[in-house]
Image 1 (cartoon, rainbow, N blue to C red):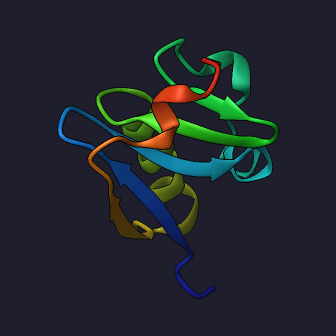
Image 2 (cartoon, one colour):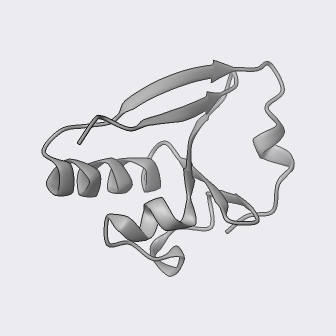
Length: 86
């Protein structure tokens, strides 16, 4: 399997890993296992960097044997903060 890539959104104060609900489920996690510090827009989740993103990445590595590529997307005022929390 080729390595998947995910977008890592950051602003001056925090960061979030963008994953789909199906990608989350593929590594054995459910939305109910994600903290209220992460955000959601439909079936797209923005996993906060301190806990939820690490959990997803650890599960991803167990499943696929390596970490995915993460593409950084920086914004001074990230749109993620305006989304509803999980």
